[in-house]
Length: 128
Image (tube, rainbow, N blue to C red; front, side, top):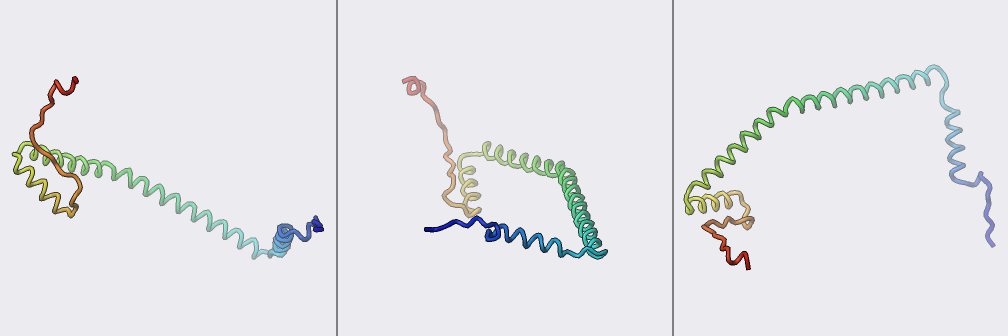
C-alpha cells in the first residue's frame, strides 16, 4: 500500500522556494550592490523614456504624412476613374483589346474576364 508523505521538505516547489530564499539572503548588501541596483533602475527608466519618445516621434511623423498620402491616393483614384471613363467611352473593339493587353501584361491569366455588349431585361420574364 502506498503512503503519501505530506512532509513539505520533500515537495519540489518548497525546495525551490528555499533555494530562492537562500540566494536572496546571499545577495551583496554593500554599497556596490545598492549601486548596481540604482544603475540598473536608471538604465531601465532611460530605456522606457527613449522608447516612449521614439514612439511619439513616429506617431507624429505618421500623422504629418497623412495629408500627403491622402493627396497621392486622391490623384491615383482620379487617374483610375479617368482611365475607366476613357474605356467606357471608346468602342467595343478597343476596350476588349485594351482589357486583354493589360490583363496578359500583368501575368495574371484566368482571373476575371470582361463581357461587353448590349443587354436588355425583358419585363415579361421578370413578372412570370
